Length: 163
Image (cartoon, rainbow, N blue to C red; front, side, top):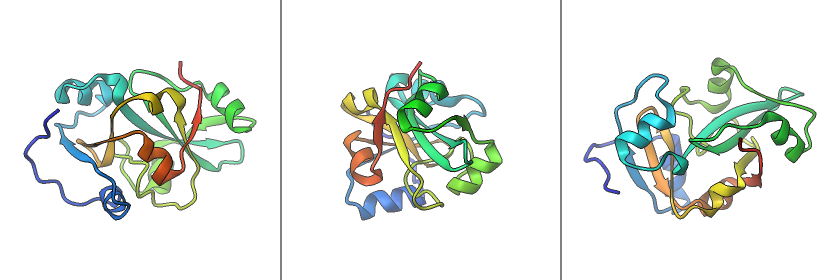
């Protein structure tokens, strides 16, 4: 898939990826409020299943965590909680997610997260894909990379919680 010829300034996510020596491609699209992964996949000509969304959630102690999920799937918070040994998991409110991540909702990347040490989980089947698109730290901006980078750079732990 070709990238659009638009200059995108560095984000904390791309800075981290470059520092880690990760090979990635840049994909710019016209951000649409509440368009989600369906909109970006359509504009970029990618299957929505390979566009990975970054969701900021919290456990019963209000400790943040990140779950990376296929764009065309939802997270079973019950199954996620069970998989990570928590009593419960729920999504963070947008302002809470922004405070933890340092990113605007709709532009949240798991790379370059503001709060250090936040655990990262990834739907296990994402790791089987050849290549994924994931937010690059700005609305309307995704990066393409090998899913193995999620484990190598973020220490992402595979879980099964997709519905």
